[in-house]
Length: 180
Image (tube, rainbow, N blue to C red; front, top):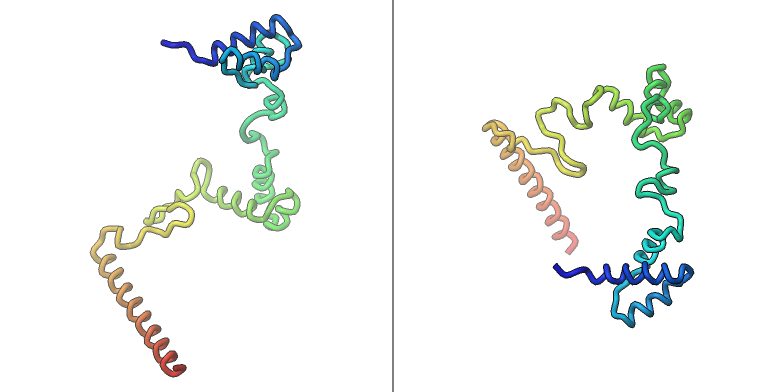
């Protein structure tokens, strides 16, 4: 299998940096173009790191990883939701809790609803016969539930709606006729 074009470019960068540790990317780019080699700035940085010319950390141990702290939610009650749960148990109102914790009232209600569902039960896992749909999606119609009675009821509702729209359309026609 043919070697990648960039592998030769990387080797060129390593050799050039070994010869001249202070070489600039722009100078090396010109020389690589003359030799018809493809190099990129990231290759230049990796070659310098490989030779120890610049400081570099192992992947996942850099500056960002050091400042991020532990991943996930804190296990103790120091999180906002943990504080809210303890204050809910004390009997405070949602507005008082939101003010004390420094969060929105909506978050207090969300934590309160989660506490009612119980541990390990995701949102929308209630026992309702109609399945919970995604945001903005209408609930499944009763006709899809499968019973003949629900189909008949859906047809009656449709007839009732059609008659209501017809009456409204007739009223609009009368109003327009009186105007013209």
